Amino acid sequence: MSHTPFPAWPDVAEQLIATATGKTPADTVIKGGKWVNVHTREILDDHDIAVVAGRIACVVPDAGYCTGPETEVIDAQGRYMIPGLCDGHMHIESGMLTPAEFARAVIPHGTTSMFTDPHEIANVLGLEGVRMMHDEALMQPVNIFTQMPSCAPSAPGMETTGYEITPEDVALAMFWPGIIGLGEMMNFPGVSNADPKMLAEIAATQRANKTVGGHYASPDLGPAFAGYVAGGPADDHEGTCEADAVARMRQGMRSMIRLGSAWYDVESQITAITEKGLDPRNMILCTDDCHSGTLVNDGHMNRVVRHAIDCGCDPLVALQMATINTATHFGLEREIGSLTPGRRADVILTSDLKTLPVELVMARGQIVARDGTCLADCPHYDWPDTARRTVRMGKELGPDDFAVKAPAGANAVTANVIGVVENQAPTRALKFELPVTEGRVQATGEVCQIALVERHRATGQVTNAFVSGFGYEGPMAMASTVAHDSHHMIVVGTDAAHMAMAANRLGEVGGGIVIFKDGEERALVELPVAGLMSDSPASEVAAKTDRMMQAMRDCGCTLNNAYMQHSLLALVVIPELRISDLGLVDVRTFEFIPVLEPVS
View 1 (cartoon, rainbow, N blue to C red):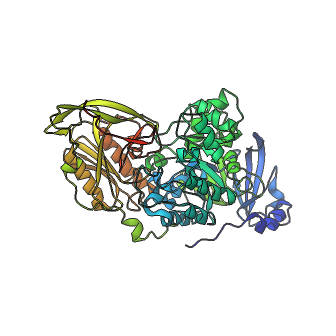
View 2 (cartoon, rainbow, N blue to C red):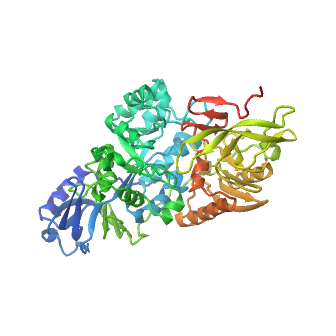
View 3 (tube, rainbow, N blue to C red):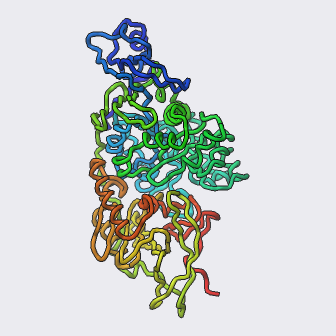
């Protein structure tokens, strides 16, 4: 890994003092802007920011006294100067991009700090995969902090992953330079029940004085929630209503509210601030999951801040939730999150605080984007073959592998069916009566087949079930090696032959997303790195993603960002029903249930 650490504050304190006192000139001065101060929640007109050694030396009404002949002067022209935006919880892999290309995509949107949990690659490649993500993250011109994944598998005994993360792995990673804490603790029943492995991971993080990420995906705010909070997770992003946000903040957690490609959980929770009047210091904005199409076409954290403002939040409060609140939570208030002396010079110039056009972005004192164009170099890690050859199916699949056999003599059966909920991570547990033809249960109407194809150990195993809510019509299938969190291959379709074609195609290309309709391939997004990411430019991946989403619509799907729903159908820690390589999981009870109800 080639990486020169960003100089620590003590290493450049003498330079900062010399510039702030006018003894030596600044490297850069941003002149004549409106200083948005997130510490005091006020706007101060006609201020200058002086930068030296990549950090802010001073913010003053007139920095002429520390401006020399070699100082680069940027005329803010009366625009607002706001801190670079921070994403408090996200997964780079969800962008279908490697860290370098993800950074290149979000820098023009003003994101200069990211708190990333690479638990997707951890499930495929283990600790070595996390190290690769960590190393490429440190090579970037913006701040990408890595949270060590906590749960691979996310629910032990409920799924089989390519690798497992152990407490020993967590303890080791806490000494890596880019590790900021522990990734979301998804095994919330494990914490509530004092599982020794989960508590050992939390303890290793706390002993390193780092932050423990939370993930409490349950509406139960009783003793189980109390036990979870007592176990140590410091934040949570799985809330979906005001009561969830209130409960977390009252118990000393940070409530992280998310707007991703498919998660619209800001509007329902920000009322805790805008209507209930609670202290906003303990609320943080994040994205969680954004695919490349959203990043290229709609934005990143700037999109989330705009949305929070549209939901009635004061623009300065919304900015606090995407800057200083996040920095403080991770113990980085003296490094990032505000435009004040000593902090990294991560600055956005914008002409309007409500619509938030991102007109210039500075990171660590360097201009990295202007008017939507990334100007920075985002170096790539040299991903080895072991990271590029991860789809191991064991055999070519055929229609018989996707058959759900009915009990002998049955003309119809009652099936337990996963019900997709638009714009939300939870699913519903549904029951449908399905017809039987020649001994096989048939997908019909609003019910499709779903299968999980094992792809880590070449077992050739296929687990079949049913799903509703996509609205697919005619012979079709969609397959993806992005299948949170175990990342086997999810195949959803109306026809077993098409499901086999889609699965085999992903085996050929080494992972990604593919759609077949009427016997033809209609869209393909290649994701060669771990079957999760592409190291191609975001614009290219986004264009393929747009074609993929159009193909989903051509197959009859009208759900908003249905791809994200598809990718989460194997996430066995979010209620109600999910599929794993071991069977159909009722996440309300963490028990396996039969796909077909027994015939009485």
